[in-house]
Image 1 (cartoon, rainbow, N blue to C red):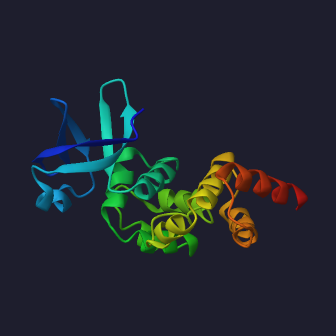
Image 2: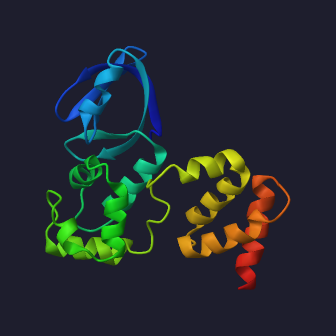
Length: 196
């Protein structure tokens, strides 16, 4: 599985871009290929998710790791395939998307291509309360710069399956501690979780 590709942007098409890396051109499906127009023939970094099907191996591309994570959450919902997920991601109002899911706004969600009423309801059912960490603003970037070890430990908690609500509570507690390593933060976070 690929995490990201760094290479020269050599082609832009309506549904995809091509990045050349070590003599290989990677065709990457992106929501809005033309956002890269000013970077033509320059080196860029694109986070990717590979989908392997019987008839195709497809790379889907994103500007940031947070966008990729939001896409992965979307395609985990029954009825949302990679193409629909990419169409939803093409609308750069991720904050509006999250707000619509949190407030059960079916009308907003059905505006996306391939999303009917049933799929919109499934999006709400599966993702409500789980998208707080999605790419809404650059808040996470400043937090990471301030304390990357603490943020890494919170990501580890998320990977273990703890909810965003639980993680936020622990984050507030650990923020008050003296700086530690990621491992120490994670150990303390797990102790705090077990006390509750």
